[in-house]
Every structure is written in structure tokens, then in C-alpha cells.
Image 1 (tube, rainbow, N blue to C red):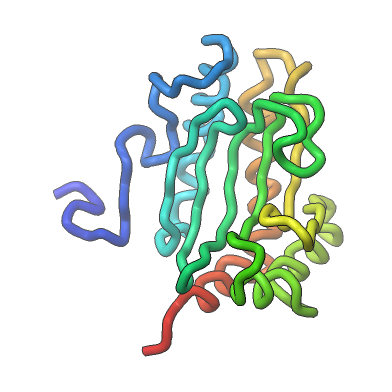
Image 2: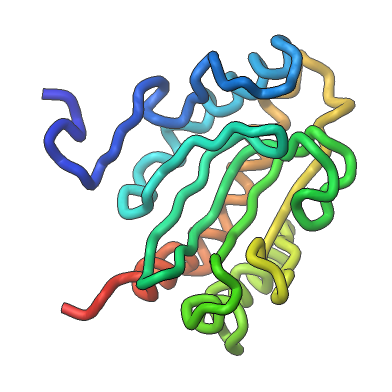
Length: 196
């Protein structure tokens, strides 16, 4: 029996362990750039798989973003993080030279108790992520008045095709280090787990 079969916890989509975009994504990129993006997700799928078993994984592809969103729901709000590529400028905080490889953490809606707990409070998961990421040298920008409350990005517009996959995948793996080391995953899990 395949891993995840019959176990709703694993939610394993088809293709590259669930982290490879479908080839019919409808993304407005030329075929060469889309192939590079697919190869990037193929390269990072194994390292990112194991710690995310408690997060809902969803592939997103639209005119603004292509990538993966990992989230948990707590009452009427949801929180988590996303790895992918911003395809337009001004859609995500700081993105101005797309395509940009992007990692961001979010809580929606902003007016929720979950947002207050995870973003606004002193010592919150998002503030710890921003502080630790600065000390580690991979800084996430804290945006305490936005649903996308922590973001890190880098333009890959001028990155040569030959090294695109390495630059983008290494960037995402470096972004994951402070997410894990700051206790962000555990804090989001705890904040979205009901009593009992």
C-alpha cells in the first residue's frame, strides 16, 4: 500500500512527493521558465516533506504566484507559510522584480484572535521568526499590519537558466532553516489545535 493511502494525515498529491507542480499549471510563464520552476520543486521535495505532515499542503498557480501553501486552521482563521515564486510585482510585500523566489508566513484574517496571538504579541511566533532569521543571516521582513506578516524574497529574473534551479532551491532551503529553528511550526500547530 502506498504511503498515505487511507491515512488523511499525509494528503500526498500526485507527482514528486506532492511538491511538483502539474505541467498544465496555466502559469503565464514561458515553457522554459516553468520547467525551471518545476525542477526547483523537484529538487526540494524530499527535504521539505517530513516536518510538514501536520500542515495542509495546497498547490497554488495563478497570475501572481506559483508554489505551495502549508496551512493549519484554527476556528475561523488559518495560518502557515508558503514557498514559491511571485510572478507579478506589488502583490507581496517588497516584491518588485518578478519572477522572485519567495517564502512567506501568513495569518488570515488579520482581524482574528489567531493573528493577534501569532503576530502582534511580544514574543509571538512571527516576531521570533523575524528575529532569529536576522541573527542567522536569512532575514524575513516582519509586516505586522499585513496578512503576509513575514516575507523573504529574491529576484531570479536575471539568473541564468543553467543555475536557476540551484539558486532558487538553495534560497528556499535557507528560508526553511529559521522557520524550523524558531519553533514557528510548533507554535502555529499549538495555536491551531483545539483543546482535548
